[in-house]
Length: 106
Image (tube, rainbow, N blue to C red; front, top):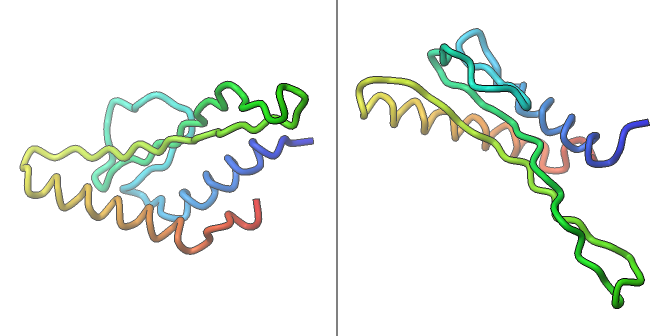
């Protein structure tokens, strides 16, 4: 059985992978590869749930704020081209997330 957290992270990874192409990669919890694809790299990091917030004086329930992180990486010598590639990558990620804000109900 998969935890709710893992189900959400898998759904987020699946959503992000909709923008992957032969020149754009999406990775989850991996190191930065030696070569960055021409149209960029999207890296999903699972993050850390941190310490729980206790409600009702420590009697429960407990609330966790788990934040996943998404790194966007582009590589280009010319600043204007690099900025354009980075903007295109941001737009692609935003479009992928906007297409399914509930991550399939996860």
